[in-house]
Length: 389
Ligand code: TXA
Ligand code: MG
Image 1 (cartoon, rainbow, N blue to C red):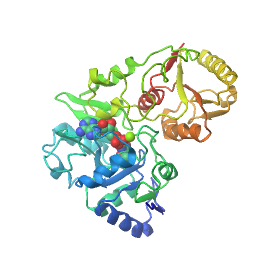
Image 2 (tube, helix red, strand yellow):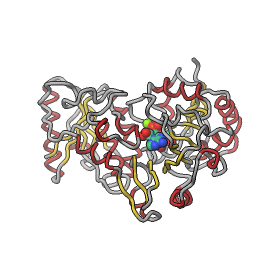
Image 3 (cartoon, rainbow, N blue to C red):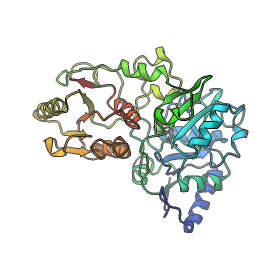
């Protein structure tokens, strides 16, 4: 299959009118049941007409995604919402007014028959968002379709934040890629459901719990998030290479493989039970109260790994890169600024792959603001491997 590539002059913060022919061509493909990747303010999405089962089937196939993991439906204006949902809770109304367009996905009761049952993976709810990227909004509006769009990466791999990354994962598998520059937030949207008392966060993301508190009386994190974190083994010594890969977590690190315990805690956002974002190398997080201690431990682990013949990588959020003597050292964002780290996290994980790094150590990032979502993704990328010192 030939993948068309449109190098548009749109970017996250400016729109140029002159690319409207590219938008019309891409919209035409979407209307014909084809797959087109496009930028949003969070990550690139892989779009298809949400009403077409054939088109949605092809999303799952192109990504290699398990079909019990439902997709988010993207809209460009409020108009089409009524036709997709069975009800709009007052809380959802407040959230939409405050955060749309933007990185917030809201789970609504589904209007039966509104989209292909494959989109919702058989659930009686539908996740909807209005992205804040001029190219995404124009494309969705021009298509006239509700657009189902998961992140445009092969299942299990880091999400894509540039069109080049989309091409790497999806070239030859989809009909089109619209390049609208690098995305802004760098992590996916926050997924919430409305509760009687406020909102429940099913997946942390671009909109923080602190921001949600501005318009919701009560903001909770779904217990499945906490359980997922406590399921992670801590203090797994790197020298302990025995047993299954991934710190003894069978299957972790491979796309489409359930994390252990997934069936027991039944995540409300089905995607949270799968291993995600994993680089090909073995990634471990090193955490501790003393930055110096963390640095020393990472240095020691790097030395040990190099002596085993591994190609080593270090991901740092705080330390100066010169502090580490690994083959590839990536300083992710500005020190003390989780938002800038979030912007670059997935690209950093992909760089380790390009450099064929086999053994990666990551510092932990501060969990304030979007740092919470960043650490959620990093834990998944690490398959739960954490050295707590
Ligand atoms: O920022 C984003 O949200 C990006 C861009 C492209 O918009 N999209 C994205 O889609 O991250 P995806 O498919 O990679 O993740 C969708 C998440 C999954 O965790 C899925 O389980 C959850 O949303 N989800 C979808 N429908 C749901 C539903 N009805 N109830 C609960 N969770 C749902
Ligand atoms: Mg995804």
